[in-house]
Amino acid sequence: MAAGMLESVLRRDDRSPIVVAGAGPAGLAAAIHLAQHGYPVIVHEAKGEVGSRFGGDFQGLENWTTEDDVLEVMRAQGLTTDFEALPCRRGLAYDPRRQQYEIGSREPLFYMVERGPGPHTLDTALLRQAEALGVEIRFNSRLKHLSGEGILATGPKVADAIAVGYHFDTDMEDGFWVICDDNLAPKGYAYLLVMNGRGNVKTCMFEGFSREKDYVERTVETFTDLIGLDMKNPVDHGGSGNFRIPSMATSGKHPQIGEHAGFQDTLWGFGMRLAMTSGILAARSQMKGDSYERLWRQAMMSQMQASVVNRWLFSRLGNRGYGWFLARYSSSTDLRGALRSHYRMSFLKRMLSQLARFHYRSHRLDQGCHQSDCTCIYCRSRCQN
Image (cartoon, rainbow, N blue to C red):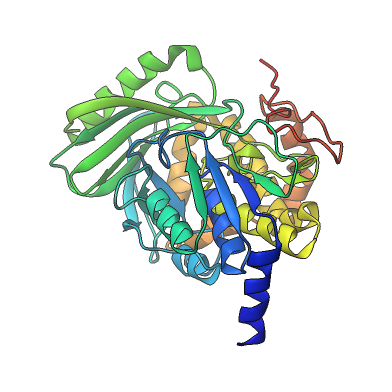
């Protein structure tokens, strides 16, 4: 028996299972990485299936923060890419005056993927990979305390932004469309995604949540006027996101990953890559005894700091500035490369970082129990409102 295989068998026989709370992309990525290295894993999921809060939502797996394609990065991380992924290179964007801008790139800007429990979703693909590796998934199981080795991946704790609108059937061609207009999506953007005869139309807003119905209605009307939005069998749907750079991403001795920690792109809300990466880093910290705080800061801090500066600058544009913003980036011959440069901490961004973090603050308070013997999974979920 090879030494590596023997070591794997001994780990499985001698170790207590490592517990993961939450079966989203972050939690499943952690479980997969642990299982690939011979560790027994139990994942507790509070719902009855993976991705139940998304219910067929389309989301973007961003492809600009690294030179390597995101699907290649996932494969290099040991994660499956056996899910449906539509490469999105070219789309249309509109400013508040309804001026149209073509945006595009030679390589995909992002991959449109389906979330939830369906047969072709990212969540289901990760679930299948985890189960094939021997990970035990316990659905309808909500942990309240975690005293042994474990990882926390229970999702967002408070809404810093919401995306609300409809899922629907359609005869429209595949594609993506975006509108930057505070009258539709305050400090955010409205979007339309279509893939394989199904679509999502939503307003992603960073403020004005109490008027979400008005904004959704305006968004639907505007896309109907601009491109002939065709919705059949619409079903309303909404979700939230929590964006922050935590002072600590551990609760007691347990790593917090994905949206449980607040790991999201603060500008656009793309968070799946950060979620899965944080899961793998947490798994490594459990396996090797490395500092999770050091690992996530080395791998993700610079990108997250840049995204906070990007969010602050974008929020200052308002309706007067969105046209300038779209004109500038639609003229780029390599939008993917241009976006990548804006997710790096340049000298100017470092100068603006403290100012941006002062003006942009998550609704979630960065406080709670940091004692090494803490076992409570939800003690850090307190927020400002």
